[in-house]
Image (tube, rainbow over all chains, first blue to last red; front, side, top):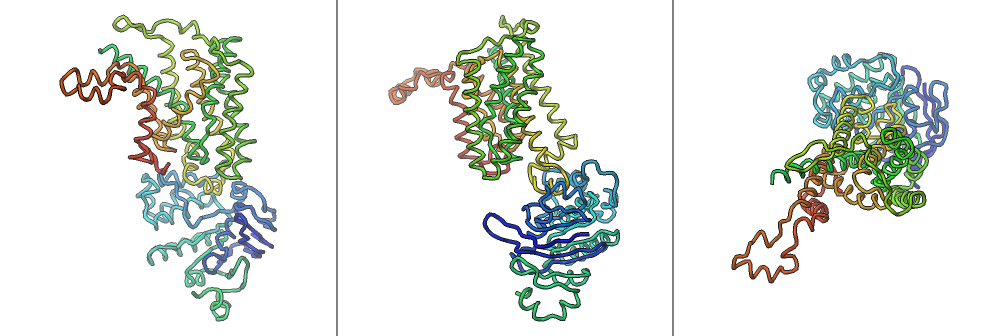
Length: 231
Length: 316
């Protein structure tokens, strides 16, 4: 589905990504773990084309490195940012509508279905996005991206700042998404969840990948956890 | 008295709506791209001169359509080949770019049409009094200006609230990067918004040109007022710009029509005598005489007491 080789990205003069290699297969859930500031979020953003990366990014057999974000989105990569980026003055329904791409026909998800998954969104369909709670905003931002029918969805810290109950709901949603044949690239702070739902995990440190393996491999590798994950 | 109030209200609303035609584009461009377009009034002037030139050759009505289209196309080119490149170097560079553009437009207009006012005439089909109140004739052309600006305001509202492109524009006001990552071509939307924004300013130029003076200093006269409107309304707020436009339109026209002065206010009572010596410089100055500075006074008050403007969401 997605293959990244030697990805470099810069913010101004700071060299954030220093050669990231990763792969996501069809129907796979992959997590990128690591401490804050090692470049996990930037990896997702650079795959989306902003900041414009150097290196090779191949999605469904096409080179997408250097393309514009909207082109990359139209090819089938969905992105859910950490800051959620809900359009505050637009209603919940309008936010969802904006997830539908220009010229798109149908797809795996409809507004009706997102409402079925999250009845709260239906109740608040006409409320401005800015009035939602943190958990509701998180559902909305994921559902908005799903409306564009991506083949790969990249989600940045979906459980950050949410209640344990909400975290469970998000976990369920991720499985539901994977169940429809969508690959997931997750950036997650909570080790437990990432280890439970991922097929494979990457650990990042200082702008490149320092570990790659199954959740079981990572659990077994105390050195990596101590050096790159535990605070 | 009623006559003055009636005519001033009408004139004030008209002036306010013309201001809004320009301020709406300016404020939307600001909130989407984060760039305060100094050249906005320049595009208004281009609209007036293009309108004049076209009306001289083929008539006023074709000018009303063609001049804003031309100005819109120039605006789109300016965004695509100028602003978008300059944008990478930050906001200061963008400000300097639009600042420089005002001079380019000014000089270009002076090279082609000179510094003296041109004879941009009211079309004959609208050159009659619409109605007469208390012996004062109100020109039909002014009613036409009012009609056009209200119609454009309604269409703009409809497009922004009810169409998909309007939705994309509204979304891009808060998170343009996210809109792009949802698959919308935000660059193209920016170009379009810039084009439509300056085309609206050009419409204002075409319809205000015959009523006011079409001259190469008209952008310089209007530009500052435009910034007052946008700051008073709140940078990036369309609703705020609308209210501020009408407010300043009415404030200015009523002030111009008023002959009141401090002397009238205090009369010739005994206590007024002391005040009169103390305030002798401004004792007999009428409101009409200070009218031009009133919008700027309002600007200063707003900046002191409500820095984000009437309906703005961010600090100026």
